[in-house]
Length: 112
Image 1 (tube, rainbow, N blue to C red):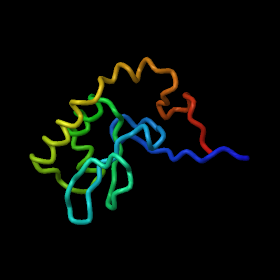
Image 2: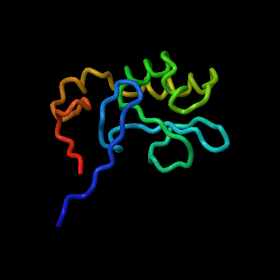
Image 3: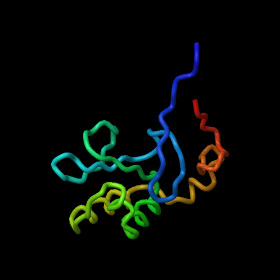
């Protein structure tokens, strides 16, 4: 029996390619609301960020989510997303994990 396909996505800030489940999806719903989509199934335009505080803070500071979601985040959305990002671990843990791919060909993720 063949291996199951692993859906890969790219963090909009650091450009690391990871399995979809390792990233957090932020979605702009058809109604225009910005939400964190933990399950990755909500309808709308999505963007993915790593599960670390640094990617969230920098993506919001550099307007990377605005660009990826093709909208302008208002102050309320921005603060809500920052609050979510602050509860995530620091990026240092990712740099020490040899199984994390940088999207440059190393790591244990297989394309197929």
